[in-house]
Image 1: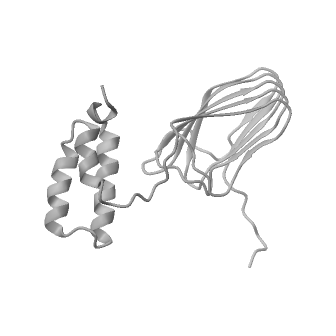
Image 2: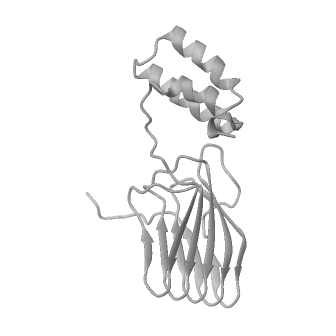
Image 3: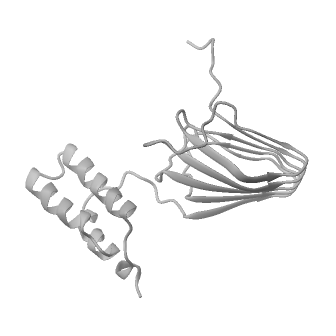
Length: 184
């Protein structure tokens, strides 16, 4: 079976509808074209149905792999600034520290699954304002887990990060960006 014959999800239909609405606001589609394409998008069954609707429109979102593995034995793993966050991110670190700053990242999906395998290292995850993180499935043997001021339940329209995995001796900190008091 080809990828175009695979069935789409509600999220796929919604993403195509948003792209069509963006194209309309940019003047790429007229009202009639938007209505016709939206009707097909919201009733699409396969990726092939959606592909024809948006093939002639530019895509704003970068292509992001669904699963990415970051691995280090003793170095520092750091991602910050404008980077594309995958739907599922697995981080394996024996002695390294991990810093994942999602506050300025491009995240084209509402939920990010973050699987941490930390032996002796620690991890800091910086969420965008309003984001939430569930750390209930993260096990910490001799370290600590801190999510001060970060809600654990999903919020409508906000990023939701689900953290799983384990750490033997390190710590996990999930927080919002630090406020800078003396900037101009």
